[in-house]
Amino acid sequence: MTTPADLLEDLTDGVDAVFVFSPSSGFYERFEESDVEVVVVAPENAVDAETYVELPLPFENVRDRIRFGVEGAMDRGIVDDGDEVACVVGIFGDDHDSLVRVRVDEAMHSGVYDLFANSRADPGVIRDVFEVVIELGKKGQKGKPVGALFVIGDAGKVMNKSRPLSYNPFEKSHVHVGDPIVNVMLKEFSRLDGAFVISDSGKIVSAYRYLEAGAEGVDIPKGLGTRHMAGAAITRATNATAIVLSESDGMVRAFKGGELILEIDPEDY
Amino acid sequence: MALQPGFELAGPLGAVPERFWLALSVFLLAVVLGLLVVKINASLLRRAGLPETIEGTAFERTARGVGTSTVAILSQLSGWFIVILGGIVAISVAEPSYAEQFWSQTTGFFPSLFVAVLILIVGVVVGDKVELLLSERLRSVKLPQIGIIPTAAKYSVFYVAFVLALDQIGVSTFALVVLLALYALALVVFGAVAGKQMLSSAAAGLYLFLNEPYGIGDSVKIGDEHGVVQEIDVFVTHIEADGEEYIVPNDQVFEGGIVIVHDD
Figure 1 (cartoon, rainbow over the protein chains, first blue to last red):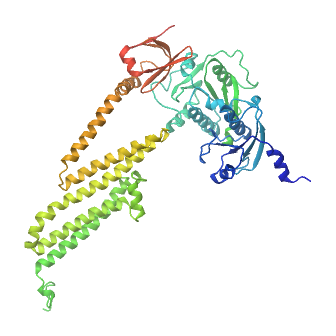
Figure 2 (figure 1 turned 60 degrees about the vertical axis):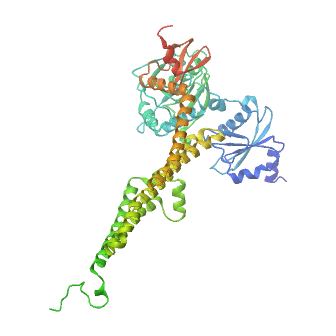
């Protein structure tokens, strides 16, 4: 006779660490006494946890969320290859409703954490661009779906591997992503062709750029268009990160090193 | 006819001299005027956005704690000023001989006391606000000792307000002013010496921001460093070549000039 408690026992048996996602302080205190390592993964460290991984986006996809937390912990050496961790997450709503057992494995390293934490550009800049793109994907330009391509970081090299399609509307301006006015400007400019180039610190260097990096050896899923190909190619040729909003299926995809790292649906946010 | 002028009353009231009635009406006028000023001042201060501006300052919080607000205190202060002034005028009308000696001392002193209290309140509120703004700006700086800067700024503003207020009521403040001057001088000298490089870099950076002689992506040579511009901010320019990123202070751009390489 197996009771639900036995099932949980099996899941939690011999775990090396417990990952708690976005806990309230009362919920976190219950873990403080436990003898296994407790890692808090949340947008901000509201509970003053000792080991804490910052979640830059509230990933709606639980796989991405867990992956980000585990990769972040791996990167900091909190957990190692072969460790077993239990993740306490909320799948439906904010309350914790699920327990997921994950085996930490180098092979599960998808680069989601590196995309934010170890890119050339500041993590905050990448997060800001994600926010703009997600909003753009949700609302579109005047109700119509739009596509957009943002190249973030290593701007000097990107500029040398691209050419202007027209006058740069951001010439001699000093606007940064994350400024409230910029979100409106970017939305207006998103109907222009070409890519946005953003520097490491978040300054919008140029719009209307035609990316000229060669696409040899870039391997992205079949079916994605020229915009994705151009984005992937520039990240292979430089240390930049590309965030692409697809016009056809409305998905947001991030590329780094010529590879697709993250795919999210803006409608989930 | 039976009708009599109102103030020629019989009985004990009739014995009251006419100038007492005048004094009473002056005082009543002052009270009405004071109430009016309280109302007008309160609405003026509110319309000027004072409550939003001073929200969260310690003074406002204390005021709220005792069931009032800074706006109420400031407007009531002006009202009390007028009422008390009216009272003094009324007394001088009713009893000239008594008021004469009182007038020269208290009344001359009274407006300065009012101004002094006003300066103190404004100083406290401004000091609180300065502390709040500074600590908000510095919140991202993860340094425990950084907390001293907003506090120092707050007490500097308090000190200035205190000296001004003392000066208003005629207390000799020469020593305090000298202390203030020394403090300010030390700040300026220290800032100028320590921040010389920063200041000249910022001045150069301002020019670079406005005119943009070179932009991100240009190939440039600053001094011995040769590379592609990756980033320009107020203080430094980042140039990168072969995976090495040089961070060059902007004043160096002006000192040594800059070479923009048009074709490699």
